[in-house]
Length: 334
Image (cartoon, rainbow, N blue to C red; front, side, top):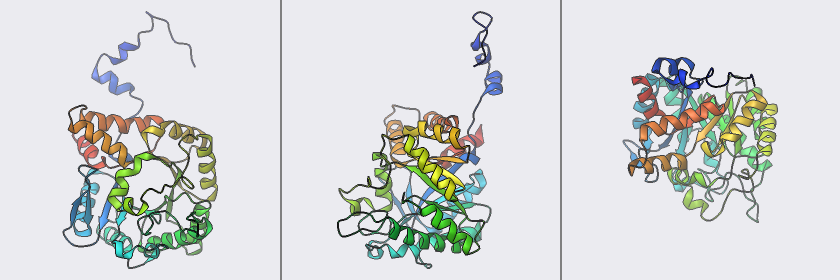
């Protein structure tokens, strides 16, 4: 580090005195272009069901989702990420509904790209919304999640989404080798422009609870967990190995999940690989801030924007956040 002038020749507070100088030397900032908005979509018409554990977040039918997409475009939010709420009658141990070309997600993707071609659409590649057991993969007779057999199904799911016109497929399952299999499939089928955002360092975190309520997998999962395929929260070097493998297999972008409790991982990934790096401010993080603000313990808007700034400061190029609309509206006024 360059030696600095000692006090009193050096007075760091000089540059903090006025708003203009603080703005002039600010190292990081959040814009609407940094945000990806995760949404929950369900079948039906005029259906809006609140997610109790995520205040302000609803499960929406497509007709109610379209105005949200329109607002994303107006606010400059570049990408909407889709997460399906699947009827329990369609859930099976093998999750075959995940690659139904007439299923919920392919139809929603096609509608969004038809109405708002300028809006990026991202889809989750994982089986947990579609399986009757709530796991992200297929099970053997002992209940262990099979890797290679699951990758075959995930590849079919990604192909179905790509054929529907999605811009970004985002495998969130943490199966070994799935990025390479999906990339090979996309290349073979001529879909060379379909991007892959890999959930490369996805931890077996306790912060996902409200999300599982939202997509309806919590009850199916029961007391089971995902520790045999998602990462151990105590590991950091392992995250770099996972990211390196996904990049080598053809990922265009990588992600760390959860977000704020894992900012050290975001920083290590960005410094090591210098590739487009994203973080997911997950449902539990959102719920905590909302609850504290509701109780008057924190300033909602200030903490929301500060939390997003922390991601950028740590090295994230963008953030998946349920605050995206609120944050973009505030940023537009600044």
